Length: 261
Image (cartoon, rainbow, N blue to C red; front, top):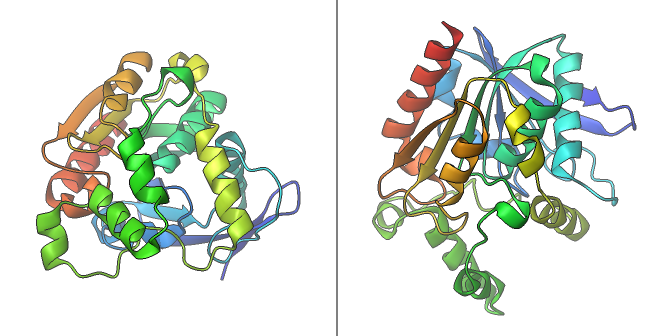
């Protein structure tokens, strides 16, 4: 199992599959690389895909210290450096999109094409989920809270015919301190000021029915990043890339190919 080591000595597990132009796939908060399992084959056919377990998840180290989305971007660079890659395309979903924003803004020479899925600029300009969503996720009945999370990710019709396993609802092996650190990292994200500095061709994708990370964040991102394209997937919730795979994967692949010329 390959690892990259950060300048601070944190060991990061990463995974490489496929062949072709390098594409980094970044998952959501408190999830390991298996987030991408249901759709990764779509991208392996045309790309050398690279995933990693964020610090705190999977087989990576889990230090009990502050995490930030900007720090996670530095971790991505450590993996690219380990692989000897000067440049890669980046597709980040949910918190992974927040990480990707920093990567593209702080290190424009390292990002070829950027795709931001179900993400948010964060901070005062980002749209937060409603209190009803917060209450559903925080309820004392953990089984009910888990069901609420699934229904934020997927439509009831999809859940009725797909009993799992689900790879988007958190890494079950994470220690409690790492979960808290991930939550704080995502909640503390605010890239609004640097978004205009992004030079990579950018596609913003979001499901119209996403209330976990409100769909209104998509036009905010697209309007803030120079030249960004916006695509909304009708009827999709937060895990649009999985449930609406037949729409989302070709959409992203076409953009990557077109942007690369």
